[in-house]
Image (cartoon, rainbow, N blue to C red; front, side):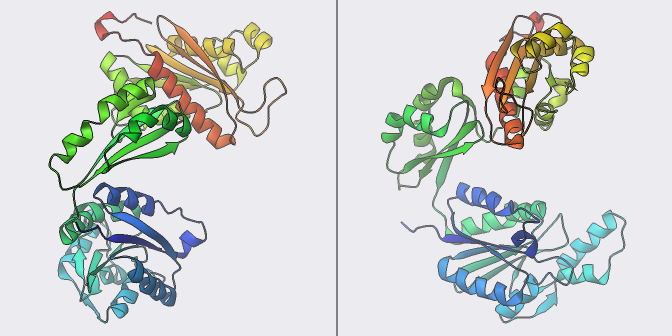
Length: 425
C-alpha cells in the first residue's frame, strides 16, 4: 500500500513574523488535509525576501512532495511570490486571459475602476496550471516539478479556502490517489482530557489497528476524533461507525453533539426542537454568551435578547434584583444571579434565561471572593438552577470559560417540553 505524501505549508509575509497577523491559514489547511488522509509534516513562515523564499522552497522539496504556499500574491511591490516562483521554475510571466476576465468581472461587479496593477494579477508563470479564484483577483498556481507539487495561493483566508476547496483538495486526491480515510467527531464538554482518557481507556484499547482516537482539548471540553485508515478491507465507514455506540454510552452527558458542531449551535438546536426561546442576563461575561448564540445562523428563531447588567443599578432597574439581596450577599452570589436569571425571563419575555456574575480580573477580588469566582444561573418556568465556578486563567480566558459553562448549564437544564405544553412567562 502506497503511503500518502508528506505535506509542507509555507506562509509568506513579514506581517506574520512580526505578529501583526495571526496565521489561521495553516490550522485550517491542516484540518482539511487531514480529512482526506494527508498529513502536514512541517509549517514554515518566510519573510518577504526573494532569497529567503528560494531557500525555503529548496528545503521544502527535500521534506515533502506537496508544498502549499500562501501569501505574497497581491498587487503591491512587496508581493514577490509569483515573480520568485517564475524564476524558480525557469519560466516567465504571461497574460492568462481567463484570469483577466475574472479580474475584470470582479471590478465591474463592484463598479470600481481597474488599475494596471490589478491587470497584472492575471499575468502568471507559463509553466503553472492556473487555479481559478472566483472571490479575489489573485489566481492560484499549481506547479508539478518532478513529482513534487507546489501550489501557491493568496494569503487572504477566504480566498485561500475557496481555491483549496474548489481546486487543490480534489486535485491532490486525484493526483496522488490518496487511500480512503474516514473520520468521526464527537464533541464533549464539562470534563478534561485526562478524565476522559481514563474513563474510556478500555474502549480505546480494543480499537482495531487501523483506527486511532485523537484528543483535541479546548477551553471547557474535548473534541474527540476517531480516524479509520484504509486497511484493504471493505466497508471502512461501516466498521468505523460500529465502534461508536459503546463510546457514546461511556461519554453519557458529556457528549453534546457529533460532527463539527459548536456548543452554541447544539444549544440552539435543542431550543428549536423544544420550541423554546432564550435570553441572557450578563454581568462578568459582558454579552459574550449572547454573541455566541447569535453567531449561529437561524438564531433569531430562539434568541430574543440580552441585558448586560454590569452595574448594580442596572441589575436592580432592568432585572429586578433586590437591593437587600445585593447588600446582604453581594453582586457575586447565588442569590443575586438567581434573581438575574428570573428577572431576565420576565423582562425579556423568554422561556428560559441564563445569567452570570463574577470577578473576571485581574483586579476586584477579595479573600472571600478571589478573582476567578463566578456564579451562573439558569431559569425556566419550573426551576432555577445555580452553579458556582472557580477558574482563573486571565480575564479573556475566564470570560470564554464561563460562557462555555453557562451554555452547558442551559444544555443540561432544558426541559423536554413540547411547544403546545409550554407555560407562558
